[in-house]
Length: 310
Ligand code: SF4
Ligand code: ZN
Image 1: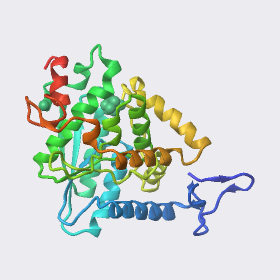
Image 2: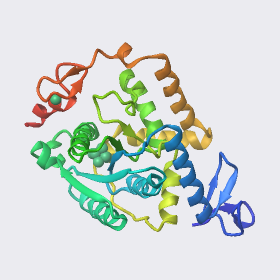
Image 3: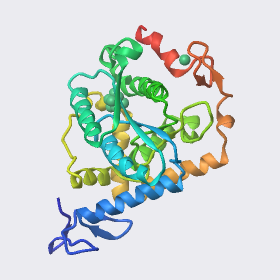
């Protein structure tokens, strides 16, 4: 993988004589594999520190689907945590039960965790909710990602609690964060738009997103450089997702108007500073069925399960 200049073939790295593998537009630099790896690892480490995502002694559950983002997340966290004292990583994989898709990514997760020597747990929808996502979705395919997202969030939080973690790290990248801002705006979901899942409220396990400033493209190149790139199948339900359309639209906008994604994320931060979550959502209560914190009588999972026949 190399970057091209208009007339003279592959561009050289701005730091050495090697061929560049990526052009970082914001920095105006071409970088070779080694210099890109160094640059990206430094940026992630700085973002983790500046946003106080990790403290000495943390037990961090890492959501490891086995896909690109979570693979990069575990690789990067494995080196970042060495800068802190007594921090432990525990990888958690959720098996939603999606035929033709999950097996490959689960195998990839198992082999990565074992290569890095990181404790790894797999939790399935079947164990937690009594059925696979495939069975829950019969006739409801158009709501696949909403249903999957609600159940996966609960599965991850439960597993994280079970292994004694005090934080949950997820592989959300810059593109995902910008897509979420736009999707929540399109849905008119102001509470979700301004909610800060990293806040330590004592109610939910705080989530950290160490890749929040790293683009999808940078993650892909990082995996190639680290020799961890593999062509895994895509979830068959992706085509029903609003996110898929938003993703394509945002990529085009980012290409035409560089900085679009960063500006969207900034607008969310500004809104969150101006509004408190309690201004746009009722007070936090306990779910009458399971006791989880929520904004009404029932949490999202307990509202959802009866409609899935559970
Ligand atoms: Fe779940 Fe949707 Fe992701 Fe598939 S694409 S794993 S259904 S959230
Ligand atoms: Zn509940």
